[in-house]
Length: 359
Image (cartoon, rainbow, N blue to C red):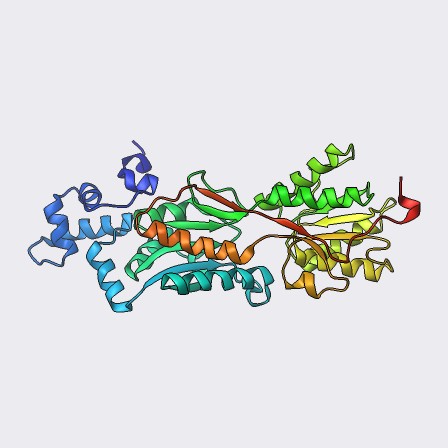
């Protein structure tokens, strides 16, 4: 039998670790394991070592430790893990945090915000155990790298996890919050088609990112429905960044047959598209129409103001906090995947294509 198969079920499935699981792994009785957990001295040193090793392996945290942490802190707290890169300048994250803080104040919980590196750099079991011992009631991840090992470790420590529009596809039973990415992309593309555009390109986000791929499929569905060509195998992947939008749009607009419209997977990347058009001497929207995705402050402050898909980012933040609090109280989420509705906001970056490109 291999090592994984020989471990208790809680270690393999992510179910909360019990004292019985600790005792089974250490090869002792539950009474003996309880003595070690409660600091009793009437246990042989070798036996104590076996139990302590099982506790460390399984990430077991006793109810007494949790209660002591909560009493010391005087409040319930949630760990919020975010990508550190340009976090203070990220309009999506700023809007999300605003909504999350509103819900935290209403529900009387504290949000502890930490960069993703604090989770990824440590062994999952150790990380999860320390969070439980610190009195956390759950973890919200707003990151690009979902980890089943982290989720399993949290489960063993008795802590729920909620993912926010994860770039990687999590397990189907992992609670996640996001927006209607496909519908938003479809509506954006239909808007451009109705204006008369026929050559509409899509600039996506990180390669393989679930939300970007789904947006790409929404674009492709609208194109196919109108009898237009769309290649979903080439979604111009890159970061949801200004730099990627600038680079991808420059390549498209300097090609032999440049598009008359570009749908972009984020407002930040759309700013790069607007800059590429400016550098190349193209007027938006007279020569090129541009649609973004997010409806952050960037869309309202750009020149011209950006037509974009509004996703309720603040509401996503509020929903994530409400969900993790509900799960931490032992309640069941009505659905594992929550998608909040998007809608198109038409501003000044879209218009009919140039007369010589209409057909």
